[in-house]
Image (cartoon, rainbow, N blue to C red; front, side, top):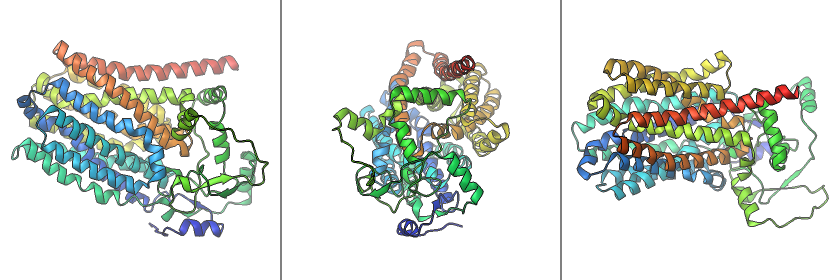
Length: 533
């Protein structure tokens, strides 16, 4: 049952010595619903942008390269602001960020309905809409991570399943609207639907309002915990600039309560070490053959407050001489750029960025490919997209249970799915009959559903929870670079060769490059482990 303890609950619980933990349910299911509703409309608009304006673009003289540029600017703006995720969610709550993002999404969609020139489309859809997506997406993702711990995979699976409803309904809705309205009027109606994101974002309540008392441990469990955890210095909390909690942000999402013996200190120590030490840690992680799961995380704090309001100070320890940080060191600390010294994180993030850019470009160009290569009409394209989305929807719900049954890690499930996506994309370009395309689309939907669930679960297994916003932000920056560099290349290939076949070959090349890099990394780690033994 959902609980709303109120803003003062965290402070009162800490005063009384009550240990708290994430609810793993309760109001968290409302957060899942908010995630789904927001992404139903956002992904639906991005998915059907080319379908809505394909005929209108011909009259305006906008080419395939121009269309690819608009879509990739949208993705680049969205992902390029990822570096600000951590600082932004320290300053504002997830609910505030989500509402601002929803309003920008509405403004971007409304302005796009009035656009008549290439620069206008770039500003309205590429920049304004991209800014809204950049705000609302991390706010929803971080909220789910804050409310769920043990059930996180199932919660994410349900959230992306709800959001997948948009990929089923929106193509048919847009197709119906285009039969009765102009493309501009159709986009105006979609802008009105986008306003539903505002009340959905208001559901993102601070996690401290809903945390529950942690179950009491038995004596045996306490002894086991004491043996397993390293000794840490007992610290007192006072107010300074280095605390890490914001009531409603990812920083307050942890399994249990923040006490003086929290493993957070050991995590902070890990990320303060030298580059060589971090590389050694990364090597040990890959040698284990599993995802490197960092168990330490941030614990509960008093109430909803900004990062600048809290600080830790060790009053019992001797005073250390403080060295003045350089500007570069401050920038590194502010954006958590020390994550880039972890080879495992860099290789994983770069691979995800390449594969994601390739998949999104194929996804957005699919309506144009079907019209020019396969000769399908608007209804056939909408029917294909709805069929694929329906299968995608089912497998988003089943993917967590499939992974549990096969006992594969999140990373391995993702790797298998992107290899399958490359295979089925190639088959779509070989078989041109509508019946074959529908059949292949079903298998493409299966792989896409699995990919959608497990992709956001890879990084939480590589970094501590309090560094997750910055880790995802850096990943978004890598995606932005990939979109800005590779996106126009795909459009240029089409204009030079006059065929989408070479575009799909290029898309599959970069997807398989991700799989190859990861497999080579695993092989090298395995050989090092064997030689060491």
